[in-house]
Image (spheres, helix red, strand yellow):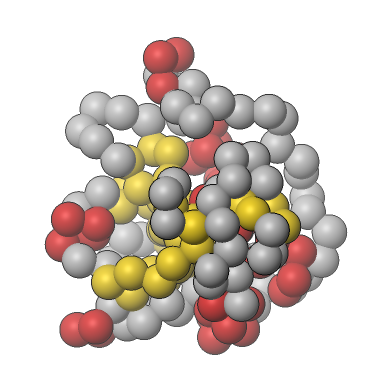
Length: 145
């Protein structure tokens, strides 16, 4: 799967409002909904429908539910093997479960990522050091849909 194609699809979601558990371009999505929506656009039917989930992503139970789902459907990559279109998994604070996703977009000194962020909707932000430090896993879409 072309990383450039994934980035173009993800940028098509820019401006979509944040809506927990939603996955509808222009109407609303959360970070998982963004990944699900881009998957549908570039890969086809979703391989799995997520069950209802809380905004804390099972944090009290210490379950890495989002990470486990990513491992079922995406290819894990080394953290330093950066490419456009990679799915980035973030741990928002030390010791917490990983519960935020985004797409690597721009590379190099001006690296950016696209994500759905509560209070902001789908945005493209600089992949600054504070964000970079939160990345715990990197994935690629499968090669074929």
